[in-house]
Length: 190
Image 1: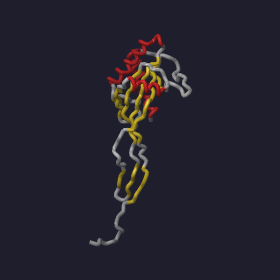
Image 2: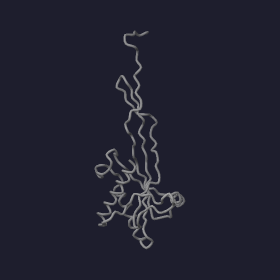
Image 3: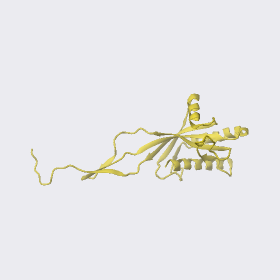
Image 4: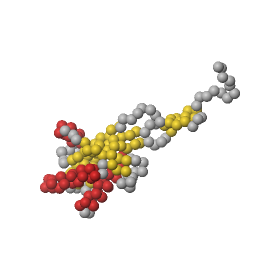
């Protein structure tokens, strides 16, 4: 579900770029920034790279959901809700720095106008997702430096968003337990 969601976001922003800028090519690519061997993972230049930089579990209550039909109680695992931290990095050639900033501005404008995605405003959104909310993250220079060092790349003009939230709930019942009741025909000892 993570891939499908990020791919949908990439497609939606490319549509936005195409409407606003009349582009014939996709500018946003879903990719890591650096390969495991340290080489650049992005094919070509002058792209905005969308990459996942962190997955965070959303803290929810500890109770496990279940149901009881009167005779048998069923227990399923609670859903797992996660937030994704996504990075949009403008990977443009050095002589195209102004263009990198321009595209980064369009990313910010997109999420300023559409900070909540639903199936109503984003028909290509996975049907299992009720809504996605986007919030820009402000990192100090030290934390930002740590992000880029962790990625193994040189700094590029970029913006980070916290995306709330994906819910993983397969709805699989994990356990059935019959209700404990008095044997039929027994009398009360009161």
